[in-house]
Image (tube, rainbow, N blue to C red; front, top):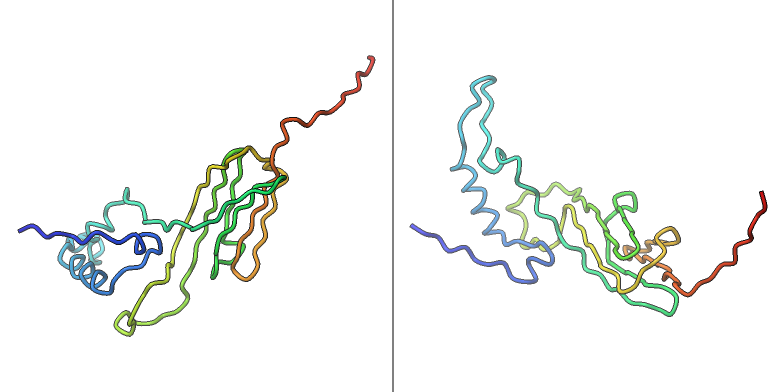
Length: 167
C-alpha cells in the first residue's frame, strides 16, 4: 500500500516548523523500524534512521536582507536566541556564509504543546555578493538578535605609489 506524503509548504521549509501529527507519525514509524537488540551488550538496537550514519541533519536556512551603499555591502539577519559565540561568519571576496545554532533549553513534554513553529537547531546561509569586498576589513555586530555585517567594497580604481629602493 502506498502512502502519499504531504509536501511541506514554503513557510514550513523556511521556518523549519512541523505539525504535531507529523512528529507523532514519525515516532510511530521509528518504533516499528527497530532493528532489534544489540547482541553484545543487550541494549536496544538502532532504528534505521539512527543506523544511517551518512544521513545529515536537516539544516534551517537563515533569512537575510542584502543591500549596498556607495562604499559597502550590508548583510542583515535575525538571529534571536543565538549567542554570538554560536555564530560563525566566513567571508571571501565574493561570498559570505553565516552558520549558527539555536538551542532550545526548555524541557516541555511534546503532548503539552499546542503549536511548535520556532526553529531550533543548526542553520546556515551562503550569500553571493553583487560586488567584490575586502574580507579583512569586514565588521559584524549583533544587537537584540539583529545581526549586521558590513563589508567594504573593493575599490578596483584605488592606486598606490610605490617607492623604489636602491640596494
